[in-house]
Length: 314
Image 1: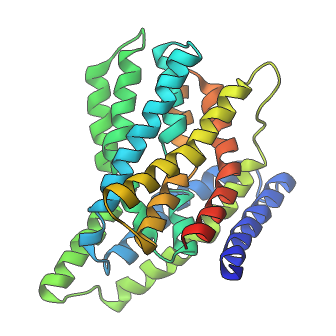
Image 2: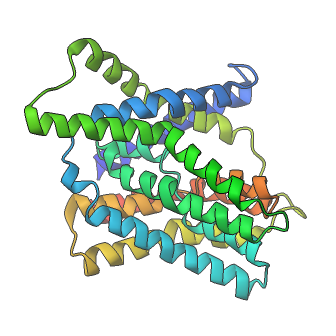
């Protein structure tokens, strides 16, 4: 228990440092964007290559992927039906609520957290691949179809290109290819390439958490008269409690998972609402305040929820 609490205390402390840096504006304007772009375009792909090149590929896309996909769709359905028929909102608004309840921050927060807490960032790869390759594009198409200004032909092409150009997809595919080559012929990257990749990979966790803390210092949420407070709280509770509960039920009772694998499944489902939800909402001008506030509130809820889960399942 002490090791678990220490692990989360370290994460919170680094985020707090980032929050303080952000409040004091020590790194100047635009620093959050710059740090996030470093993490997204350089550090995260290097981390995926570093870990995947030595990973057991058979464990990446088996039960873990199935639980990710099914639990995400189930939590999203809960969010959509609740917002559509309980709150009585439009289909486009309900699609954003669906994403707020189910779309994980699997990259900027998920990979660093899993790397630190359980020592294996590759457990987040199924959720990254599922969201980037299927769930995100499908949700954007559904938002486009519910929009008054439809341009689906150009949108489909843009979505396909965005997937092919995604640095996480490129990093994952590169790491998988290197793992296959290693398994088949025993060849590994030479030290001249492997060590720089590992060095950049080591910077991922600290930089990502600092940038996240800085971003939290810049956001004001649950503003009276502007934010749908009840809907934000409801979406955040679905994301941080209902979604991991569904993952636990599927993992334990449908797929018979236990131990570290089950823990990883549930922790991944507990990851807070991803920033892409706000990006999608902003792009179509739909329910942007719910999306923005859910990202922040779900993040605040997720860390204590994950601590409880580790204590119960770890």
